[in-house]
Length: 159
Image (cartoon, rainbow, N blue to C red; front, side, top):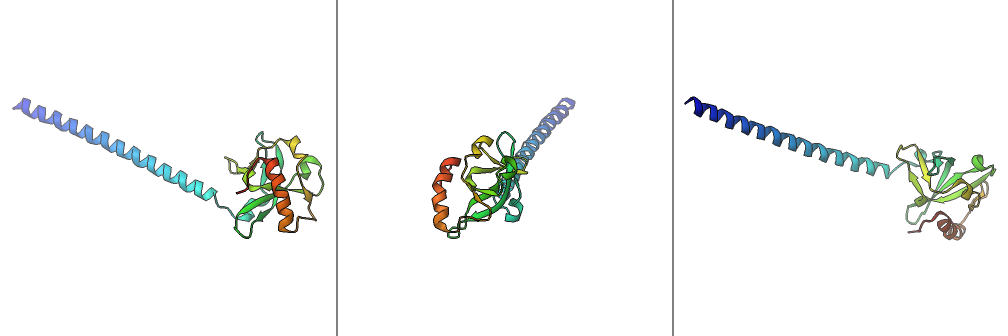
């Protein structure tokens, strides 16, 4: 009888180990699911931002060089989409009161969530199209004229 009881105890212990292992697997799966949910939520939150949080945000190139900061945003009123970020590079390049319309698609939010990255070398920006900060393109036609050249310069496509 001792042997039968001992065998039952061993069976019970094995079953308990199986249950513990299964609980650990379920806990790991639950944790992975929660992490994926949090990552998706964070990504969705990064896709929307108030204009006041974007304006004055630094712009750097992929090498980390400070290029300037965002002064304003240009929206397409017919679609409601952001089209351009207006960036001042003047402090960096001694360009005075000149602003630059950067296609929104050319800017990427940094991983540290502190600046936008523009994948353009500093020296290339000296050739970028800009406008006097007191004389903005004042019509849809003028913006449309700039669009093609800006998209080509910054290697992005209008959608």
